[in-house]
Length: 421
Image (cartoon, rainbow, N blue to C red; front, side, top):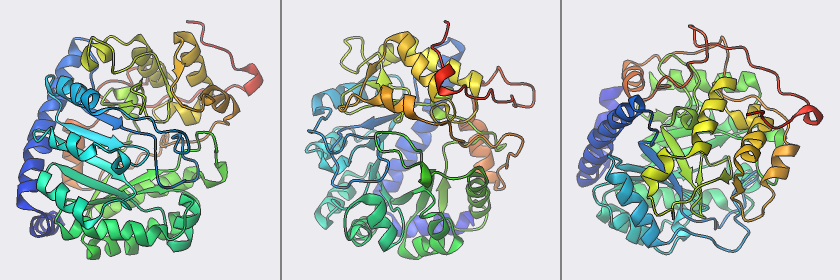
């Protein structure tokens, strides 16, 4: 499988891009994780991987989206983006995730990417704005991998994404990427309406035949102003997703990414481990994209490194979340998120300014934490990579020797109170 995947990537990807990826993401990314480990020994948390939502605007209207895509445009200006990345680079970072809204609606996206040839960027996109000309420019840059979101079949895509003819337009952008020999992935937010169609070997083989190099399965998270709880996966379906990913990694020549499990199959949260945090379109530094509260901004004159490592809000969020679950604190304990935001006087980072009311209205849901039902990695490559570069980094020291801790049930809404300290 590994030989087949490697040969397929080598044959269908621009060699200059592969060299940049191997150096900026591979070698320098691994070095960035080692620097992160060294900082942990000093009690400093600065993520080796930063995710930047560079603007709120989007050309689609997806079900359950937590970004203010229908509000006036807010974006991080080019000078501020460059300042942030340069500061992070000075501390060993070389890989950045770029999100929106739809990143390709940012008028200076390509200028930003061009400014940092010594970095590698993964751009999360619906693909509809990646014309042949844009794909050609991305190939010339050589430091970008587009991750194109596909949410289902023709009918489901239109329903999930709020516009007609979504799939055909997205596939055109995907094909433009592949025709210009970009390392290209497909992301899917699995939910009740698409899991039967897209969590299948047939679908992955379709992607392979099209030329896609990697896939990333997220699970739908019922948060934001228009929660669709009926779309959320059941616990048995969450386990099915994990089992499928582990099995297909050992079988098919397509790379499969996940962000929520280590090599033993133990659940983890990237925010809790400190391996990644998020910057909002307004420049707010958030624990993760769905926690839309912050006490700090990238405009702080201290710079992104000092601001993050000295943030009491981020520190408390990591610690408190680790004491409650190995899964998603937002889904399982929205009352704890609310209490932390109140304790630190965190501001609502949304444009709509209803994030607190949304938390209060949330009912607890299950997440990726499959307690006592872990599914270890089968394939040696994924197992070793995760063991050395993607695990919990000791974040869950409050759990017992087996990495387990019975979850404390969420209190009823009327009983939920702020944290005492």
